[in-house]
Length: 148
Image (cartoon, rainbow, N blue to C red; front, side):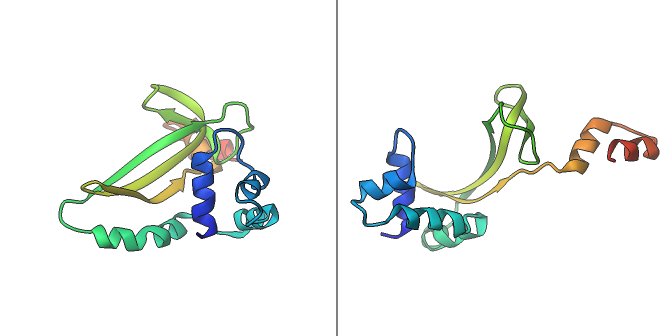
């Protein structure tokens, strides 16, 4: 079993705090906690690596009638300082604005087979926030002053 499979199963299985030492203990030291920590620190867990991981099973299932499912979700994190990732997003589910991390996810489904094939953490940079604050500004100088 590779480290990604093992770690994923551990996260699903664990009902308390998930730690590298806890995983190491669970597998009787087969993977040292330092190895788990290095794996998490240095591996790329972006959408490209996710697609690489699921590409073969998806290709085996491809056929007529597949459905691409795109959805966004907000992980509420109300007490952490704002930044380009943890900021205010509108929640259609709750009908209000929430502070947290907005994740856009993409899944593919063929009959009873469905897997995630991509995701993106939504980042709102300084310019986006300026546009949001400015609203419908006709005076370009007023807009520029908001952004600096």
